[in-house]
Image 1 (tube, rainbow, N blue to C red):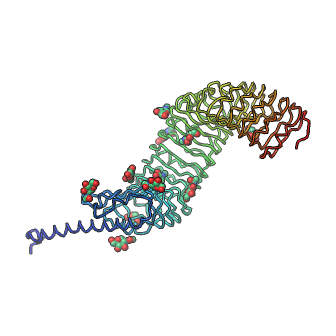
Image 2 (cartoon, rainbow, N blue to C red):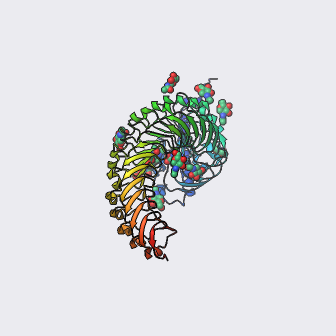
Length: 547
Ligand SMILES: *[C@@H]1O[C@H](CO)[C@@H](O)[C@H](O)[C@H]1NC(C)=O
Ligand SMILES: *[C@@H]1O[C@H](CO)[C@@H](O)[C@H](O)[C@H]1NC(C)=O
Ligand SMILES: *[C@@H]1O[C@H](CO)[C@@H](O)[C@H](O)[C@H]1NC(C)=O
Ligand SMILES: *[C@@H]1O[C@H](CO)[C@@H](O)[C@H](O)[C@H]1NC(C)=O
Ligand SMILES: *[C@@H]1O[C@H](CO)[C@@H](O)[C@H](O)[C@H]1NC(C)=O
Ligand SMILES: *[C@@H]1O[C@H](CO)[C@@H](O)[C@H](O)[C@H]1NC(C)=O
Ligand SMILES: *[C@@H]1O[C@H](CO)[C@@H](O)[C@H](O)[C@H]1NC(C)=O
Ligand SMILES: *[C@@H]1O[C@H](CO)[C@@H](O)[C@H](O)[C@H]1NC(C)=O
Ligand SMILES: *[C@@H]1O[C@H](CO)[C@@H](O)[C@H](O)[C@H]1NC(C)=O
Ligand SMILES: *[C@@H]1O[C@H](CO)[C@@H](O)[C@H](O)[C@H]1NC(C)=O
Ligand SMILES: *[C@@H]1O[C@H](CO)[C@@H](O)[C@H](O)[C@H]1NC(C)=O
Ligand SMILES: *[C@@H]1O[C@H](CO)[C@@H](O)[C@H](O)[C@H]1NC(C)=O
């Protein structure tokens, strides 16, 4: 007997075969249509018009909005992300689409359980269910061996995530599971086998215990985010092998110990945030990370000096090192090159002077250097810093006069110079400070009068000038400050009568004028201030009854 297949010899068999092949195709097309219509039914209450084209009489399924087909007219992709879809996910229907490779339904309002039928979607390469309102456990993924992209972030999944089922998904490049209320689990060792990963987002996903040394296996990683967990122990040395990292986010964990040796090898880092941990030791390795744009190490126990090389970083915009134990001075060149925007080095033991060039490129928004031991003056350059929004240098040993232009900066909302040795006047251009809500000058050696133009600075809520040498009268124009809530002028040399117009500052809740040289009658208008909680006029030369 010949082993040759008979149909090769037989043309009618050949045709039969071809026919049945074609009908197989059209059968799967019909199946696909049924599946899509079931999907549509499940989402019928959505506030969207994407389904207007899903009309089988006028359109082929390949013309349905959000559907991409293969050349044989079977469904390859469903992409309906950000379409206001609402309803449950009929995975029995979706996963009976034999050729589906991409399912993108992120940023909708899908709810209910993601069912086991997902395991029939064996050709899926791309699955995005992020930013929805699902509930319950996420099902096993082990049969989705083609998966490259998995995004389930912020979608309401709970219980134990099936970490084990990821272990053979070695094609995975993108893994984002963060912001789901999973049960607590150790760092999933399974992902250390997924050598193609370039992005891992496991922020806020209930991980505890140590970051494994084997993280160094994931050498293609460019973006690793593990913030808002309860990871503890040291930052593993393995992390220093991830030379492609441009973003490393480790904030809000319980990491301790020193930076690993070789951190300086991560020379491609652009954003590095290890804030709010218990890290200690010096930060000298940062000096090699010359591409940094944002460096955030606040709320740790770091000590030693800020590396001088930081002053030469060309791209640095945000530097936040507050609440550590840093000593020494800030590199004087800091902010000179890039679009420097933000510095907060408060609550350290820093000395030396305020670097003069942080607003050189006119982008600086916040200058926060409170509670240190800085000396010298406020550099003249900042008088031109139109972008400046918050200026706080309280509780240092700064001195000298304030460059006049500072008082009138149009975007400044807070000036806090409290507890220094500044001197000189508050100049009358303060009226131009249209955004100024808080003027905190207490405990310095300021002198001169409170300018009448203060009344034009109509955003003011707090004026605190306690314990200076201000003198003269309170200008009658003060009544224009309708938002003014706290007026603290105690322990100065103010004199004259208290203006009747103070009663027009309708928001006043706290007035303290004690320890001045005020005289005359207490204006009756103060009695009509509805919000007033606290009034202290003691140690003056006032007369009359206050009703
Ligand atoms: C989603 O709903 C909002 C509010 O109802 C509507 O403004 C928007 O156009 C809708 N978007 C889509 C893609 O249908
Ligand atoms: C798909 O839509 C195009 C244009 O909207 C139309 O010309 C074409 O006939 C449609 N094809 C099918 C198979 O419905
Ligand atoms: C989905 O479609 C939108 C616009 O129609 C497009 O911007 C987006 O890249 C697509 N997403 C995927 C995963 O194909
Ligand atoms: C979370 O999912 C949404 C919706 O797909 C996406 O736009 C966003 O980029 C995702 N975020 C992360 C960190 O993966
Ligand atoms: C997968 O599909 C087959 C038929 O193609 C079906 O018998 C089976 O129940 C499905 N499995 C799941 C988990 O839905
Ligand atoms: C992964 O593959 C190994 C080897 O083929 C197998 O023993 C194991 O069960 C697989 N894991 C999962 C979760 O399927
Ligand atoms: C953490 O994720 C939960 C959802 O599980 C979310 O409500 C919460 O806002 C997230 N926390 C942060 C800090 O983003
Ligand atoms: C790291 O990768 C190697 C091979 O590439 C593998 O043998 C080892 O098990 C991996 N380490 C971990 C912790 O997964
Ligand atoms: C980078 O790593 C190599 C070893 O791979 C080491 O010899 C070198 O000191 C490291 N460089 C820095 C700046 O840490
Ligand atoms: C940098 O600081 C600016 C101004 O405060 C802020 O808007 C921006 O989000 C910060 N960027 C980073 C990466 O922290
Ligand atoms: C500053 O920002 C501009 C865009 O706003 C950008 O073109 C420029 O490259 C940045 N400069 C530096 C030094 O990063
Ligand atoms: C000023 O800073 C010191 C530490 O330098 C701190 O003990 C003190 O509480 C701070 N005072 C105020 C009013 O913030």
